[in-house]
Each structure stands twice: as C-alpha cells, then as structure tokens.
Image 1 (spheres, rainbow, N blue to C red):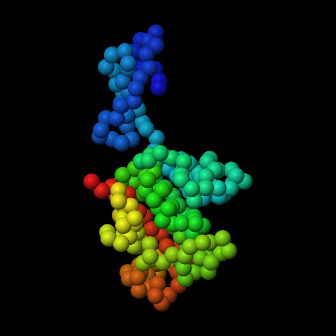
Image 2 (cartoon, rainbow, N blue to C red):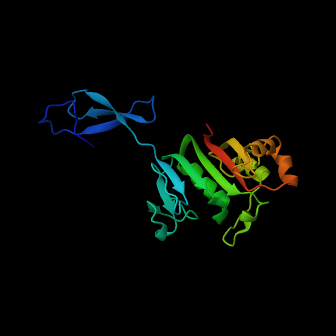
Image 3 (tube, rainbow, N blue to C red):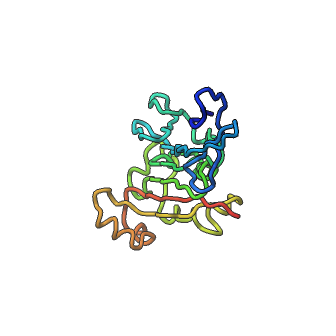
Length: 211
C-alpha cells in the first residue's frame, strides 16, 4: 500500500493494486478516496535460482539448503517449497535435480509454484558421463527419460490431474564448447545416447493447466 501520487499532498488515503487484466507485469493503482486517478505500477517478476551454491544470479531469489552458501533463502527442496501456488515467473534449476530424493516431487512442486505458461530450465548430468555418479547424486537421467515428462498419457500428467508440462526444448550436451557436434547429436538424440556419451541434458518445461 502506498500514497496516491495524484492526490493533494494532504490526502491520507492509500491506494489498492488492481490487475488490469492485460499485462501480467503491470498493476493499476487506484486511490480509496474515489479520485479515480490511476497510474501504471510495475510488478516485479519473481525468479528462483535453485541450489545456487556460490553462483548467485542477479534478479533471482537464490536458494540453497546450505547456510554457508549464504543464499537469499535457505530451503530444503525435498520438502514443500515455501512459495504460494502460481507465484513464480521462472525457475533456474541447474545441476540440482540429481541431488533430489524424489524427482517427481520436485516437478510437482515446480508445477505448483509456477504461474501458468511460465518455464523451468533444468540442467542435469547425462547418465553416460562420469559426472552423473558423484557420491551425493541420487538420480541419473537420459534424454528419452526426461522427454517423457511431457508425455500426454504416461508422463508427468499421469501423476498430476490439474495439469502438466510442455517440453519446450530438450537437448543433449556433449560438451559446452562443441557447438557443431552438439547440434549433430540432437538430430536424433534418442539414438545418439544409445551408442555415444554425453556430459549433460538441458530441458525447458512450460507449465500447462487443464481447463
């Protein structure tokens, strides 16, 4: 609540935030005094950086279970996340899902807190790479396994009756600096991973709500 900037200096009325129904990032400000003065007010986008460690991102809520990492918010992602339903605009989840006890629970929580149509960007080690088998890694992933999250009948939507995820992008990464080879591997990624190794998989998911 703030003062109405369009009223006289001695006006003590506060303003209320009203959605204009057109731009999800802009609110209208209207004074309780009935002056009908309104002005645009920018609404900040809420973005999460999960398992941030020492890598803090500007403009994000940096989250980690380790207090020593000095995150913006200390949170155990194996438990219910401390955010309301439909409140988050973007989730960055790089090299965190392999540490999670239950990846399905992780995805259910991501789906719950994301706004409709918003995305989670996930990066995990590929099961063929040595990075997939660190002592604290609890899950290994393949391209075809992650692609199944968006399956209409047997993927994530089978577990969540309210909605699911659309796979926006799902790519095998052999190595970050091998651009041409990475492109070649993703012509037929489901066959590539049968015969050749990779370091990582990056998948971007968009929240869908069943109407």
